[in-house]
Length: 388
Image (cartoon, rainbow, N blue to C red):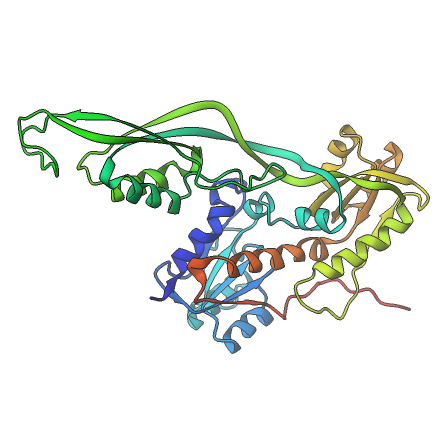
């Protein structure tokens, strides 16, 4: 059975839901048809003419990118409109385009987490928390003979999982509580019960099955419950909890195992960036440093992408070094004056590890076992360093 664009989108949104994206962002399926079959996926950072040509040559049906191809509303679909050119060519080639941007930045696949692990930072946590998940207790009442069948359907819908994202990830799955009891109901009118007769009080041995789910999964879980449950009208409760679930946010913060100088740590950063690149690149990572090479570092913050706006938070958090990209001249001066060192790794190098993490995640999903996941070899850094 061929895998659809829609199933691949659902797989990405399990770990980076579209609801996580910022209001100004434009994520999800931007070109194509959810029902279209997919045999090959091309994962990339950006959409460029070179990446699209690569997709054609490799007979790819879906491009998955970090950066959206459409940000501003298009007023026409003319081929001489720069913003419309690539989407038009994708439609003509039958290639769909899916973007996971600020929602992916807040997931465990973000480059910040990958880089933090590569640098062996300890006690890592989110640098800026944008949301803490609300939890809900699901309580379902199921005929004893159907309890295991319904439980398995709920597991497939994501019920019973521990925290899967961030520093407090759990190694446990299928976490339920089950208790036995007696369910009672009297079918009336046009009811079509699978157990009991119209007008008669029916007693059934039932299992009370409980588990905790994150709020964003409610619709999917209830749909799975109703589909698997044998009753015409399943009995279930959704109980809001004061307990809180996983947090999500931008960047990470952690500590070096041993204090290290800014100068020596910059070499470690460059080596880690090169190691995390998903493809072999001719260029070496270029890291700009603002601060004294002799400064001793202990507490580090990492924000992939453009992180100049996080300087004030880094100062508030007592960070010694902020690793990010796209820092402006005046932002660097303000940081220096306040005693904060900065390593600017650029936008490309700061986010390319996420391409590798996303591709590995997709390759590891059983539902996509028949799909070939390809990492683009045509991704490119728009900036070049010339030796004069």
